[in-house]
Length: 185
Image (cartoon, rainbow, N blue to C red):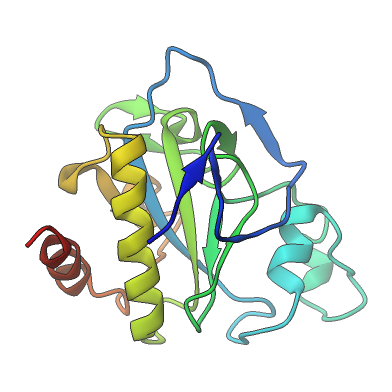
């Protein structure tokens, strides 16, 4: 299980991204957004996701990077294929993960959400280690941010339909919810 202190996971690898904004106090964290990412697309491992979130992606490494190396994006955490968690932005701040988004009529989801990236693609099954780490992380987040509930955990595709497809058909929501419920038993 994880420990959160001052918005940071005590037990995770930390790489502080410059791509964040302070969260306004009137925006209580009430949404969890699940994403996926792989860099280059469809390839796993390597430093490139961290490089992107830190603003250090070398455009010469891969032709795809020429399109994205200047993006200023981040997520609160990344869960690697082996279940390792890396944190980039304090949960008390806004990571730049959602983009143009809307949840139940509320726009600008970055204002009130936590973004978790899973290393993967829409069509590649996620690993048991990723599900286990995600479930443990979500349980801990719910302790610190109790407005995150079963009804406020969504995919990026749910808050940006037509623009985003992640975490994709490969993410097994029933399995995730079952594992989450089994921790309470």
